[in-house]
Image 1: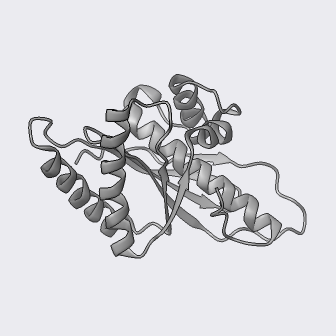
Image 2: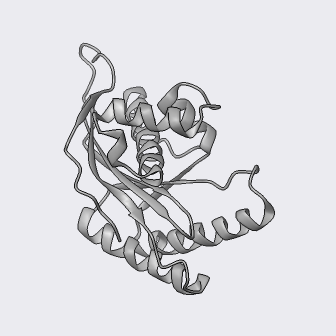
Length: 194
């Protein structure tokens, strides 16, 4: 598992509303599933700020059989959960545009991750790719480079130091952290309806 050191950076979520209660701190781990590379990114919400935590990707040996790669991804996620202790995990849904073979392999990787999360008892929020793009880049049709650019701008990170899988995972975490912030401002902390 590759976890590159990242500088802590913050991003403002918008002007605070006078008299509004401050949302409780929240640690969201975003996961961008894949059988070759699974991206992960931790985002912490502190009031109206987002702080980038650890991020990177899990990259099992591609020469190994799929079952072994999925086992390695699951074991790496278990270690990551134990080390980072997120309050909530956000995972991207399978999108319809993928080929049937790609969708099946992606679903298998998601299944391995979801099994670990289910055993750990951590709240899981699933989000569609268009929701992530809209929340982070302002358009559900934004391309990967636009999303990566906005993630790095919002979190103050150097884009060239991050793998695409990591920026995708951070985008997923930002989306869910923002949804939780909006829900808290409306009076309820959960925003699990996707």
